Length: 347
Image (cartoon, rainbow, N blue to C red):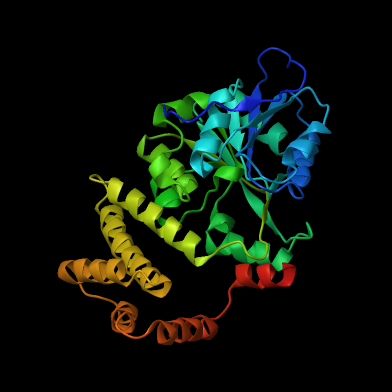
């Protein structure tokens, strides 16, 4: 493993031996939102769990908030310095004592029966490696948005999945991206088989984990119920974050191979080419014109550029203020989807 400092642990009183489930909430600078996520775990109808809160050296009052909870199932791991998102997630995974494991973000939540229903399936179906469900969309006020939830389920194909073992897990994870790590309970042994999170996929680690589970021929069970809450709130993304995500996803797509599925292999190549074109545009928008142009040249030599990438190449030679005006205009012309509407309403 890495050489980063070990986390400082402010654990609550000792746990009963061997909790069945480990719930991990990685957190950073979200002291005001974290209590909603923690409360959703403490209100589960299934009680044999430990809750591991991994704090990536938050500069806010997260440690004070956590110190107010006295439930002995809570373990608090605070890193003395920031070690970044994926490593923070990994620290909770490595500390987990349970047979089953779930990680979800500090601004999301589980519905009260999630663990009860997911544990029952893993207990009675030993061939299943992980259980996942549909989820609600909530805004910054913790309100469920029914229209956005329906749109989200339709966009990612969750509404067409029936209850039971998923037939074609590779297609669901790679092509349709129908599943979500935050609404999935895994056998820890199944995560160990794929080595959990890859640090190079930071920002895209959930997608990467699910695809690698599918590539390892693991089995997933879908519950067509909304048993988790995923939050959309204002200011959730930035240009820097977009570039970070696109770089990570490009790494992931370049690392996969589907030799027995030519349809997926062609889709992988097409996706990677399209993703790099978007990345080149973002780099040019950010002012990293040399990197953006170099990427466009690489793509042009490999295949045909999209009209958008050609426009980006032209913009890279214009003054910065002209580029910014152009990119702002492009964003205003693009129709807003349900996620942006929820974020704007919640801001």
